[in-house]
Image (tube, rainbow, N blue to C red):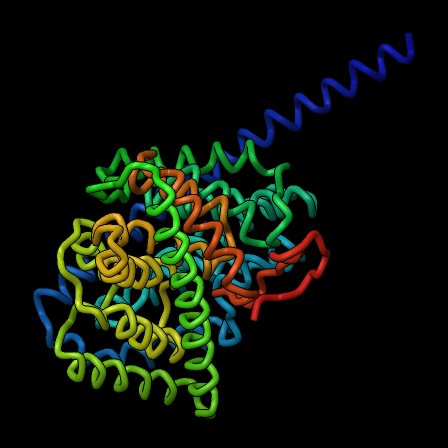
Length: 418
């Protein structure tokens, strides 16, 4: 009888924890989803204003100073961006609620004045910080606190991009490469679904691209896709190197406000040197054109790398993932045409393969291909992602990300990305 009572109690405990995790996940999904919607609309409005009033670019140095001032006033001048979110999951480090409004405002400033950045880094930080605050307010224990931060990451990513499954897997895969946080799968799915649903209620459409002329499966085409995957691995290492080199160069300037001002001036100068505004902001219009198979400037991927590094290295905010999609789409468009893969399909392959190379998240990348392009050509996308992951070394966008197991053999290495 005692054994039976103990068994029933264990069932009750498991059931209670299950229900509680769903409730918490739904709450996080609603809160982060609503803020995510406001953030999405704010960035879109900032982009519209920048397009309508091109002279706003000249205020970018002032915008940079404002961003540094905001972080200093909030006592967050040592902010490490998305790396703080990863550390909150792996090490249970504190993630301040101040992060959410700061990254929200700073990203809008970056976009309205023409800095080259994305928005997903902001989404992860907004989601993670709001979720952590909810966890602290409700006095969750250390283990549940880590899970709820992943819920916030999932909800933020899903609300902005409309790719909930990608958001879930990314949140579980990106922190420690080689180790998946499966205990978070149910609450993360709930949070992502709620976040995406909230975004849909406000008319925010899921991100997707129409890839055309997807070839049938063949040995020759598979070999060409392997070559493109190798090239994307090299480009991903180059992109990470350029971003981190820019940070090191800017760090030589002793004053952060001066750094931001100089960085803004550099971006202005590069914009006029390149002779186009295509590389300012996120550049979603260029990504869409490349995915449709329209002709792309051969040097576009390099110029976007440079402008993004000049922006983020100086302390402007946003994220690196949309610029990664830009680089991948434009490079894949050109390389696909040269390899005989097709410019549209090459752009799609380039997007997910480069994303895989810089994030070290192969499962996320394969799922991303389905949510962005549909399931046709899935095997080719998987090949490109697998090759890019294997050959991209231990480089990565996030310095706090850990590679737990070697990419080349069954070996525990537990090292941070380069």
